[in-house]
Length: 151
Image 1: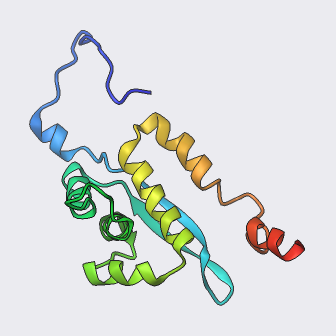
Image 2: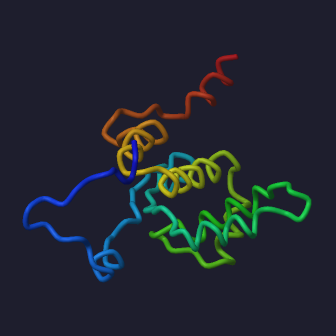
């Protein structure tokens, strides 16, 4: 699952130009149904994307503290700030999202992280694992909550 492979030019094929590289749409985007965020009882949908190298490094620089420890709140804030396409978030709004359910925020941030780090072949596999296709029937409540009620 490589993003690049060794190859040769075919007859009549040319190398990419810088304009081709800069115009390439290489930040994958997905629509997520977020079951933890609801409006009128229906789960909300958001659009997320992978981060650029500059964005990812800015998030990492902010999240890693001088003592070598990672501040997850800063990490997740950064992923939401740069990775949420619809709705787009300001710095302040991304910080406000940290008051939402920890598991839900982490799942969305982890999904954005996967879109950032994985090559295209792995993105589809990871997307299916992290957030199965929306066409599948969903339980009325998350399995963990149903299990707690049954206990």
